[in-house]
Image 1 (tube, helix red, strand yellow):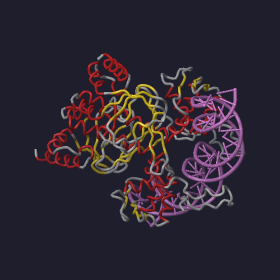
Image 2 (cartoon, chains in turn blue, brown, cyan, purple):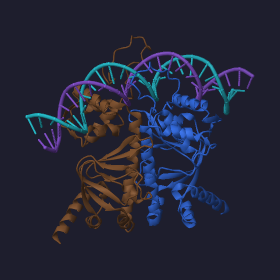
Image 3 (cartoon, protein in one colour):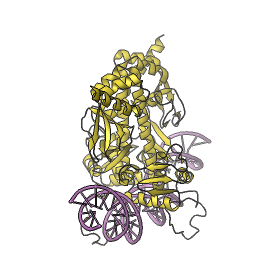
Amino acid sequence: MKEKADTNKRIVASLKRASLFTGYSELELRAAARLCTRRAVGRGEVLFRQDLPGDELFVLACGAVKLTRRSHAGRQQVIQLVHPGGSLGETVMFCRRRYPVTATAIEPSELISIPAGEFAAFLRARPKLSWRMMEELSRHIAARIHQIEDLTTQNAPQKVAAFLLARADGRGAKGTTVQIGGPRTEIANLLSIRPETLSRTIREFRQRRWITVERGEIMILDPESLRRVVSVPRTAGAARVSSSARPRVARDSLLVIE
Amino acid sequence: MKEKADTNKRIVASLKRASLFTGYSELELRAAARLCTRRAVGRGEVLFRQDLPGDELFVLACGAVKLTRRSHAGRQQVIQLVHPGGSLGETVMFCRRRYPVTATAIEPSELISIPAGEFAAFLRARPKLSWRMMEELSRHIAARIHQIEDLTTQNAPQKVAAFLLARADGRGAKGTTVQIGGPRTEIANLLSIRPETLSRTIREFRQRRWITVERGEIMILDPESLRRVVSVPRTAGAARVSSSARPRVARDSLLVIE
DNA sequence: GCCTGATCTTGACCTCGATCAAACCCGAAA
DNA sequence: TTTCGGGTTTGATCGAGGTCAAGATCAGGC
């Protein structure tokens, strides 16, 4: 019937934009799309839960989803914010059918649901696409490694600056803007800082005319300065003079650039 | 010739112990081993470097290797300590032939070197083993996610306790010991704390008779207490009484258990 | 054995960011 | 319009852990 064909077209269009499916031929895309179904969810809705079994993975068509992990001691940590074109739950196909994280929509979202079993069979029959999947998994590993590096080596302003630059990619040309899907708290949690600290840092950046903020949209005015913050070795090159010679200068700013 | 056959046997034996090769049949193991070569390295020797191209992956037969990442700002972070049976550099087969981390031996070590190109061909010809590889990559992702959780949600004593318990696995039965390969500094760096803090934490644990230390070998006396430290929500359940009613108790211990 | 250089320990101090608490803002419901 | 509730901002304070510096301890090499 006509309607079904139309749905399928839209699914193909969504998959085409997903990094998980780059490199797929038109034919392969259509074959994959035939397995899938669309699904709309409201803000706050949970797609799957950490440690629970499941049998579907997703591609995010539009909206925003957070992947979180609740630690044994009850503390929650955002692992990733997924944007349109991203995928979630891929590993459920390989790891004892359990999800390593919890996925929650932080905005009304549309997703493509892919049944794990059928997609696995689909891949098994197509070695070349299996290889693509491995590339994708490797990319994932690299991303998590990079994240560990950022979380452990950067201080709060560096985290925020790096985050902004990463979002405004395309070399962050002097006027790009960064959309923030969902409440700012989620970003703070992703960077593993408190909302209060994020707020203060943003204020600092704004006062220095490095960014402007309006309506949950941040515009980058001075990417160079932000980059400098990120790449400075830590509490910047000042000091290292004659130990505690001077009588302790008052600190009025979060940043220690000179 | 005899000698070559013997070398091959030893490689097979090493691979058999590697998680990357579990599930391989004897035949498949031998075929894989035929591609490989042994290699011994000294302490401090670098196997491959972050961001540089390369074309081999490794299985660690004995010794210890650290995987590190140097951040843009020069700070170094240990991502993983690899033990015998572990593998390193798997992703080089998929990610533009570049390594995401630097691998350095922290003890004299023996490795099996696997040429990336040939092993890729080997896998492509064996879909079932490709699938095993995907499982392995997924496991890797899960491990990194878990690590992010630990790094961000735990404080110093929790990190150390969790580390000890993880190493003394087999449910850490009251007397298991933990070997530490390489200098203790590496462990501190892995947990993203300073060596000084690690030292103090270990002293604390020792004073409480939870562990004993000798000759770079730690024995766990009281796994239950360690587990309790890990799973306590944060600065433990004390306080929360009548705000600052009491005149600020002196803190003499790193831990806040009651 | 005795040096010599790494690694580990201990103490004193200070800083960054967490925490607590109180306004403030703003969109949705009434 | 007012009310209500989640999110954000701001200020004040505190403490875990980082930093610096000085010893102690250990491991090879001679």
